Length: 164
Image 1 (spheres, rainbow, N blue to C red):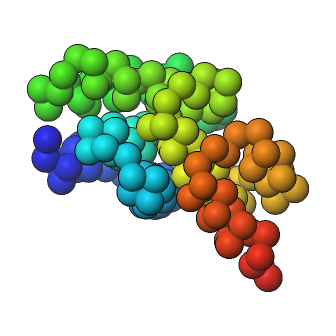
Image 2: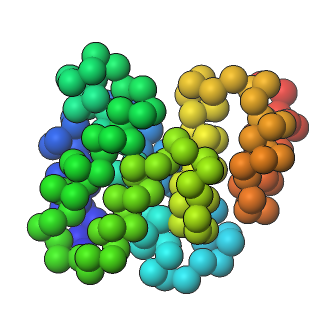
């Protein structure tokens, strides 16, 4: 799969600067966490593609519903992701997994694998940095949602030990 072509497709679909920045940041943290957790290459691939596409439903949600609430992103995102991914000849199981993660990435009870876990942790970290999550949610998230040692470490270094 040509990542450059996928990114072009994503950016052409939603050229919004803040959305692009967000997905690139989530991808970066997802990749770092996955590598530090020593996931296998296939899991890394699924994690990275899911990170690039996790918020692909934002644009259509704003158009259809006037907002990009999580439930709208989860409903609309997999449809758009599937349309984008269909031209890349990925195995059907990979497309289904990526679409499942996108369609549940705000539903923490649905986390069912390390690929999904890593995406949730990376998205939360970026949302904290961007001001979309309140810092007083960190202890509960760290206790109940974060499972990777790397994700917990990043929370500690970036938010608990940081003076910002």
